[in-house]
Length: 203
Image 1: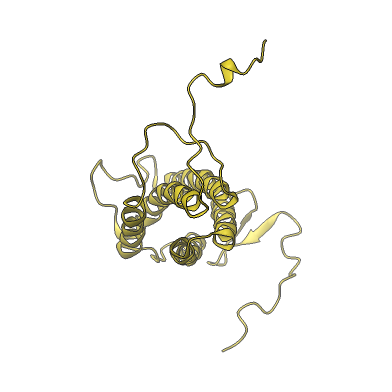
Image 2 (image 1 turned 180 degrees about the vertical axis):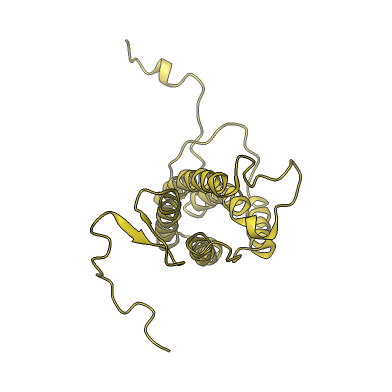
């Protein structure tokens, strides 16, 4: 088997274009590249979460997620390659249910913060939402005005699990932020209604 990455510096992108896995060359700010970039950024933030996590469960769950995101990138780079499936979606849904069952009921909104790994989980969550928006925009372009969103309560077609996966992943990252605070012995950082108004700051 030959080396998969024989050259890192190719100089082929010096004029503002890059190649997809399909062989097609596109502008570096084209919708597919914007989507791939958001997913790559998401994967990098999740890598930081895994590196800092105090929870073995978090590390195991999100290491698999990192592999899933590479598969999703390949699916975007080579359209028609269905790599994320119902099984991938079911796995992170099961992880969400298991991890969330360990946590208390929330009565207020949570502020991003607490343990460093919890704060990074929140960063990853917001990047995940952006990746979801970019992927939706891309599917709108590729498939016409109707896009790929299934009816409410409907099941996405086999090749369309990327959107559902990112949607569930953002929820899973929220739960992970709470798990990380708990593993670090910290409470959730709760939003306090009116707190900033009583801080003594005047207009």
